[in-house]
Structure formats: C-alpha cells, structure tokens
Length: 516
Image (cartoon, rainbow, N blue to C red; front, side, top):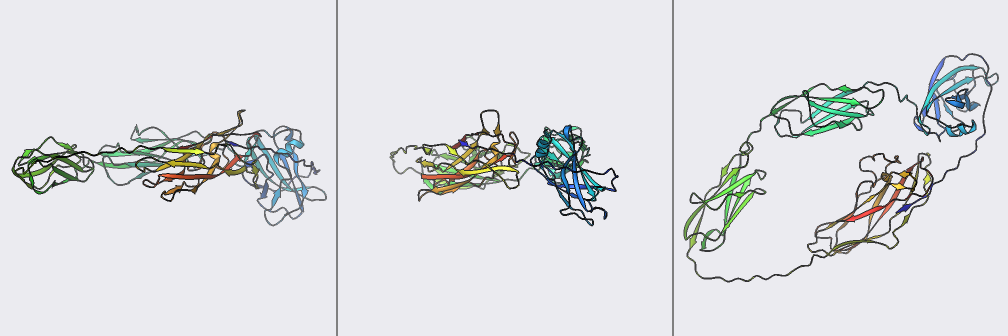
C-alpha cells in the first residue's frame, strides 16, 4: 500500500490595466504560443509573426472570451521588453489564465479565448498594428491553439507483407496507415466486398491485421477507415492485389535405427526408432519386419516414432520404417532403408529388482517485512509545472525455493489504481519501478527485472504507452532453471508521476507480488 498527500496554493497577483486611443490599428499579423498546449495554471508566451511598425515603441496584450472576459482583459500591460520592429518577438502573458479569471471574479470555462497583441505608441497609446490568435479551452483546465473542431480530410494507405505471391496458409500482415496520424476510429480490412476479421482500432495512425485464411487465387484487399474524430472524414485505400498459390507437398525422408544392433539373444528388448524429416511433418510410422507389419502404426511426435518389442523369433530379421503423412497435400510419404538384425537362441534366465526413493516436492515461498505499508513523500510539482512527482522504495521481499527439480522461478508485481476513497483516482500506470536483487545464495542465479518507467502523469482510465507503468504485471526478478533453490532478497525503487489536476487527499493502492 502506498500513501501520499498533495496540496497547492494560489499566489496573489495585482491587476494590470491601461487605456487605449480610438485610432484604428495598422496591418494585422498572427502569433504562435509557447507552449502550444497547456493548462489554465500556465502563463504562456506568444511570439509575433513579424516586428511592429517603426512608429510604435511598445506593446500590450488583451484577452477576450466568455463571460467576464467579453469586454477584454489587459493580461499584459504596456511595456517594451524584447520589443522589435525588425522581427517577431516574444510577449510574456502577465498572469496565468486562472489568476486572470480570479482577478475578474470568474472562472475559466471551455471555449475560445482570443488574444490580441497591440503595437502601440507608449506616449499616446495609439495602436499601430495588431497580432491575433486564439486559445481553445477544451475543458476548464486545458487549452490547445489549433481549433479542435476544424475539419480535416483523411487518407488511408495499405501495405501488405509479404508482398509477392504466397502459398496458401502463409501469414499475411495488412497494415493501414491513416493520415492525419491523430485521427481516431477503426479500419475494416476487406477482400473484395467481404470483411477480413473484425474492424481494428487505429492507434498512432496505424491499424494492422494478420491472417492465414486467404484461399488460392487473386484477392483485391482494401482498408476502409471509419472516423470517430469530429471534423475528420473516413477514407478507403487503393486496392492491393494479393496472389495466393495452392500449397505443394513437401518431400520427406525417413531414417531407421535399431538398438541393440547386429545380433541379440531371444527375449531381448529391441527398440526401433524412426526419424522423419522435416520434423514438422505430421503422420504415423508403420514398422515392418520382412515386409510384414510389426505392431500398430506409431504417431510421429517431434519428428520421431519409436517401437520396442521383446517377442522377436530366432533368426534373421529385416526392418523398415514407412512414414504415412496425415495430410498428403502438405507432405509426401517416405520409407527408410532396411536394417538387419539376427536373433540368437536364449542363453539363460535373467532376474531384476526395482529400487526406488521419493524426493519431496518442497515449496516456493515469498514473504515481506511485517510492516507492509510503504509511504511515499508528498509529491512535488516539477519545474515546468506539468506534473507531480514522488518516489521511494518497497519493503524488502524474501523468496525461498526448496522445491525438488530446481525449476527456477519468477516474481512479478502489479498495482491497482490509487484511490482517495472519495471517487478520485491516480492511474496505476503512473507508477514505475527499478527492481534490485539485494542478495542471494551463492548457488543461485537471480536476475533483477527490467526498469519500468512510469507513464507521463496520464489521467485515470487512460491507457499507458506500451511498456510503461505497473498497471500490467511486470517482472521484479527471476531465477534460472537449475539455479533457483535457496533464499534471495529483493527490492525495488518506485517512482510516481501524477497529473496536476489530482485532487488533494491521501491516495492508496495495492501492489500484489506473485512468485511462480
């Protein structure tokens, strides 16, 4: 269980204002924001697209938007730091969006907030030129500078691998690439007018399908993208022709060995072993003696089939092994060379005893120090104000293996979402770790699991980038087969990255450690 506390304080900022003359502005320009996306807690810079006219010597910035912002708010007073008449220059907003709203006695709401940078004569405050742009708040706490509702067409292209003619049963990979890459939706792969499998969700501008089901013939494959993002249309790729040929039966060879070889006494156990190549060929082997079947057919497993008999008559024997494939369209049959064996008269009786002992199974156990609570320090805001971070170490774990067979073991961990018990959460993927092997027995080979980076302060319910966070089971340490018996002590440093939107409170999560 992990526990942390978070708190935030709002600094007081003075209201800044200025007067403007009624003179009309000169030619207009635009600005770009740094950063282009952010939160209501930021006071970003904007960089003008050009310099101001030469008859101006300062600038100011007016923010307009919903509610109290409708009449315009002087978020940057008249000043001249970085002012230029020859090139674009940065304008620092004097307050964060939240602080500006507080000064107006209101709050930020979702909607469009226009920012106008005025080039002015600092004495008369005449406006000589303006640079305009818009902050789009998609929620009360997050902004972007590109219109989220702007319409954008999409294009879909299809790649097929392998690209040349393939034999029926070959795995084909169809990959659709959708532009723009941030489009969301699904891709339905089609063979002519027929669907190939279910629709595949687009991730990072791509969707893939692997299939081995295409029959012999020519197939026209397309990828049909259906968009779920507002303003982005669906699209269909050009058709890619895939030629599938009928499979050809693979030739096989069969070899036979007989043990003991040469000659044996009657009643001796004789083993006949057939080796079929390639090993993937499925079917059965019929052993023969002098052209007559010897026992029932034996199923091939891993490329081999074996028959043992102690009932051979005295005299000369000629053995062969004949492979019969389960699918004659996939593999051909084959027969081994003849192997001879002479069976001599029985020379005497034999007696035997069986000696046995029992090795107890033993056990694999894992334990943790009696105090299983891990309390992390209060998260701190990063220098760029993008997230809250904290970290610490787990309590030491003891893994003891006394099992027979020296099978080796694996210890893994998975954490639940953090919860404050009041409906607020921190995504489990935001917790990462760096596993450590504290010590081990000399005879053990124990390897710490790979470092797992935390997700970058993603929101509750969001999916983590592949390989990030402990929301999925991750390896803490493993012992190799033949080198796991004994006692080892394990630990891990943990790191947590929480969104700045996390509500203050005590959050707890359960880390489950499993040894197998």
